[in-house]
Length: 60
Image (cartoon, rainbow, N blue to C red):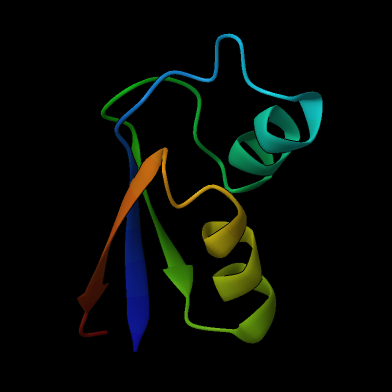
């Protein structure tokens, strides 16, 4: 199973650790999407910035 992560909100005026987490996920601007493996470390990063991103499970 893979996860499609899409940035939905801006990182402006967010703490630096949240900005870094969004960048480490591979997102750069609103409506950017990336496909990530469904692993515990990725899930943890998503949980930290869940208010800024949308997550969908995809096959593949």
